[in-house]
Length: 250
Length: 276
Image (cartoon, rainbow over all chains, first blue to last red; front, side):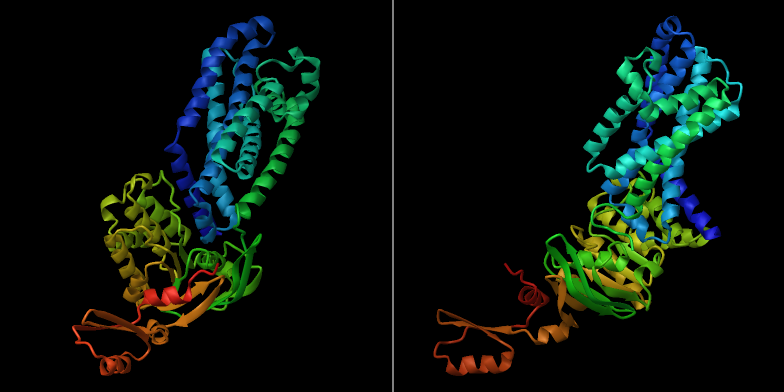
């Protein structure tokens, strides 16, 4: 058990180092929503009641979905650099490899959401959440969902080009249909009908409920987010554990 | 000890392994040679546990590859390094995953860095290394934990002479300490340098196995006699007798006589020639 924890710690350390040395995507997904929040705030505050909440949570969820690309790149890199098989031959068990890979990207996703919430409070005027623990729980659940979806995407794509297209088109589709740009109530009827099928809808629901201090809303959205995360995570885990291409773990 | 018996592996229509068997004892370096597509890399992948064979068995000291994970050092054919991590971080990562801690890990890193001449760029990210430096770093990640089984898949491909010699020295040393080594290569002079036994692979199986001397004994050498405008070349397994016979029957004056023993290159060409 001690040896296992040691290996997981080592994997987390070196995966985290790689994330820290390639921060460009994260910086992009932090700065862009910050600019858009400032630009959209007057529009949202005039158009809808809870304009500041929509401004912050909408942009936060939209760019957290974009951040799936960070997860995807972290995993796809192992394939492109042929390093995953090196790890699979090591003493580290599959679960250790997956935890070591997941924890740093999960922390990156949490960090992004945390910074955008703080920015929203300080610059946009988002009211301080009454239940910070609920916000942390919601961000963690949503972060898990994003991590699992990003991992699945990376393991199913054939090339980095495919991954970039899937991440960009997927993020725009998932987040906009989910109501991050325009509240669902203002969208056309057909879009309102399909909105609940988008993970972005439930991501926005859980984050907004947590920010507004609404535990019932968080409880309603949490099972859906977790369900999406478990299904997509299972597909990603299967693909990762069995290798890509012709490799097959014995 | 490595014992692979009757391995088969198909990828769609391609038989990558087709009855591949090989035994390598402790302290032995087995040079695995053969043309591209002969099955060398697939064999290495099967032994390392990365690829499941369709049939056949692999035993490493009586256990399956899955049971000895972490006790195999593998240096794949292609460079597989994290571009943003330094050489030192690579050695620490793979050493730590193999169970080395603190002082033992530091000591292993320093020793191997010195042996493979990595010391000068230990703190450089591998994305900034030259080809030879990458090769040495990759080999070092396979050697860092002193594994009892080493699988080196063309570890010197494209490497400069300095890189090649440094690596060969370390591999010889590890074998002398008792490690079992499978070393695939296209550079046959490396196998002479390593004093390796030889396995020639073709079409997914080993078609010849033995020491270099044993295998070369079965090959003809060449007797060449020139003079008087003639250049006579005769392939023979008994060069002395053949030379005497050529000289006895010769009418022209003799200017030069050359006896050429068979080389590993001849062996490679004769046994591993690809079939159309």
